[in-house]
Structure formats: structure tokens, C-alpha cells
Length: 430
Image 1 (cartoon, helix red, strand yellow):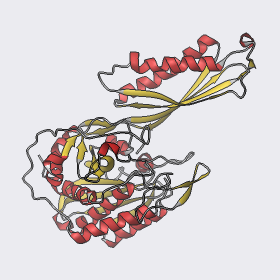
Image 2 (cartoon, rainbow, N blue to C red; image 1 turned 120 degrees about the vertical axis):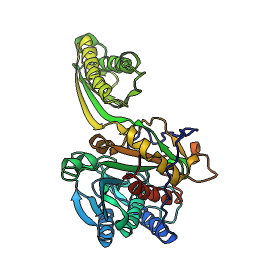
Image 3 (tube, helix red, strand yellow; image 1 turned 90 degrees about the vertical axis):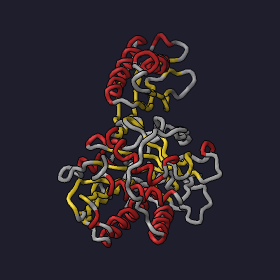
Image 4 (cartoon, helix red, strand yellow; image 1 turned 60 degrees about the vertical axis):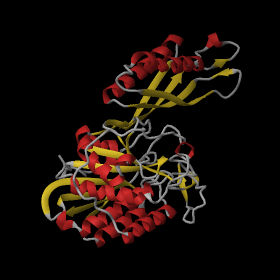
């Protein structure tokens, strides 16, 4: 999951929307399977792998699925694994997704299965850690696959298990993640009727579920602006063109896109500069200044509007000073949009599994997720699963992407059972 900062704060809403619970029996996993899920999680946590390098993890998943008699396809989007389980009754195709990659973070927790793995990221030696909980996601879906395979005759339809690499973003110069899986034909031959995903959240009480109809998580786009002037001595700025002044004008004017040009009553948006580089000496006006930043928003049309206005603001601001601006926008993850109909349909199941008082409507989250690509293709439902231990203040708990990120493993049972019950209830839900 991409976030604006590693310390992104988040808490679920206080009240859940009143919904009549569906009259189904809750399907639960036994103690033996729960312990397997915990063991898988700890093993994967102790052996984390960076994006597009999930070789051990994908091999573990593929071996497990094959052992369950599930049809398996590997090496999709480099290391992705897809399993297909045919149920005993006719029905829809339901996709369940888990992401597998870890982060370039050196773990600081004291758990006995802490990661000591060292990897390479952008040419640097780094610690590697499952600081975003993807190890839990994989373990929960492996557990769900085992239960569903054992009860395949009772399943109406087919289940597609998507174990996805590179959710955190492919290394520079590479493609990866959900976008590449779809590009390589994931949904081409077998298009799901619905896709479900779960993301653990480090700053929500263990066992709580955060859901939202419509936009849930922001789009995430990177931009860079190269402001070009003409170098001169700092004592004679009139003899050149100052890109630093031009860059300052661009930074200020770009802030008016959200504050004055976007209809923020429709959807929130954020444009932030994170890098400003230029100059080598105090008395030399340089030739160029480099700017880089991020764009987050919750509406796909507004997203395109921001792209256009950012480019116009940068070019016009530079032109006024005699400089030029070259704008490049790297489109990242789209807005994660939950199907309102699917959420309404499956909310009773979610409440039954987690407990009605444990399911709350989530606020908008300015972090981003590439589950968004699946949800643009087919109706999607993506929820947050709290993992803050009881007795700890969620607001003070280490956030996802922190080297101190810690997950209460009792949440694994709930996540696994959510996957299972969604599969069984979807064909019959109203």
C-alpha cells in the first residue's frame, strides 16, 4: 500500500450503518487451520521479499495450492500466482486477492520471528520487512484456500485466488503488480463477477472492519518538473534567467489548483511537493531546478483535471519569469472504488463474521492501493482489518510501513473467515 507518509494516521468511524444481518450460519475455521495460518504468516514474515522478487513466497503459495488440488498458474507479472478452484455447483466466478511483497524497512520489533533479511533497493543495501502486513494477507488467503478446497462440493461457482506481487510498486524500470497481471490477461479468459480484498491496518483495534461504499483510497501519481533557466552570477541576476525564482512561483501557484480551481465539495485532493533540488553554490544562479511531488485524489475525472492544470500552472509560471518548465506525470494507482452494490450486498456477511459492533464505515484514506486496478475492471470490495492489540491506543500504535509495525495475530482468523464466507454467501446474497 502506498501512503503519503509512514506515519499516516487512521481510525475507523464510531458508528456502523444499521443493516439487517443475513440469515446464514457463520462458517468458521478450526484450531488446526488457524495455527497453520499463524505458522505461514510467521514463516513469510521471517523471509520477506521485495517487489518483483517474491520467489520464495510464490513457490510456497504455489506448492500449497497444488497440494489442495487447485489448478495453479505461476509467473504471472513475474512472480504472481493464480489458483482456480471449481466448486461442485454452478455459479459465479469470485476472485480473492492477497499481495505478497515486503518493504525496504529494517525491522525494529522484538518478535521471535522478526526479519533479519538484507536486500537491495535502488542500488543500496537495505533491511527488508513485512511492514505493511502483506504476510498476513498471504497467510489468510492460503488458509481460505485450504478450507474452500476441502468444501469445494458445497461451493456454487468458481474461486480465483490471486497472489499478487509488487503492490508496493515495481522497481525503477520494471512493470509489476495488479496492472501487469491484468495486462498479461488475468481477467481476459475468466472475468470475475466480483473481487474481494482485505488489508490489515496497524492503527485500528484488532478485529474491527472498516468498509466504505464508493471511493475508499486515493489515486497516487508522481510528478516531476524541470525548471530551466540560464546560469549567471548571483550578483547579476539580470544577466541570466533564475530557475529558483521560477520554481518558487510554480510551487506557490500549483497550490491554488486544489484551493481555488478544484470543486472540493465533490472529492478531496492533495498536491504536495517532496523534492526541490537546484544550485551548487551560494553566488551562482543555476541553469536548472528539479521539483518532484505527489498527487492524491478520490475522483477519476478530477484526477485528469489536476494533471492538466498542474502542467498549465508550471509552464505559465515559468514563462512569466523567462524560464521554461517541463512537466512529467507518472500515473500511478487509480482511485480505489468499492462497488456500492457489492458492499451493500456483502455487508451483512461481513457483520456476521466480525460482529456487528466491530464493523464501521471508514473515512477516506489518502493512501493508495493497486487493488484499484481490479475494481475498475469488475465490481470490487476492499476492507480494512484492524490489528492493534487490545489495551493499546490505536492512535499511538505504529502505523503501516513503520519499522515497529506489529499485528495481533488473532485478526488472522477473522480475515480468513471473511474470505470463506464471502465466497459462500455471494451467490445467494440479495
